[in-house]
Image (cartoon, rainbow, N blue to C red; front, top):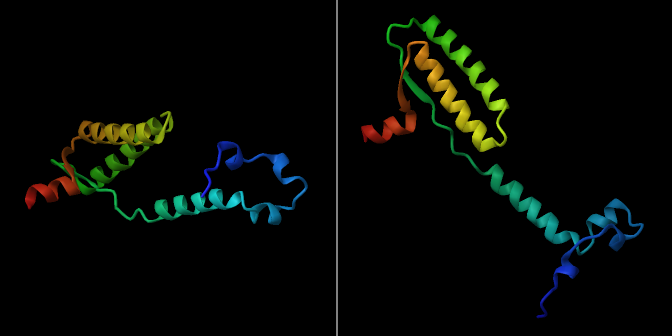
Length: 121
């Protein structure tokens, strides 16, 4: 088995000349790329872990007031997350703003459903 150099694995438009899209996709150089993209799509599609919900103690808020506070805080968190530079920062900012906003509205943050379930076990 011979070792392939980087040049033999790299792609260039000139490598394919005037091939049609169908011939280009079926060429030997495209198999590793197509395989990688398929594997990546398969792995990301298999992530079935549900995100835990936040748990708050309403502390005197009626159901209507709590629902209104939740809607307002989701909006504020979305506005903050949109400004983030990447998805990790956006998620962290969204959670932080949502919890702080709900606490400012009078609800006490108890944790997430998975945290509470672990404590109860």
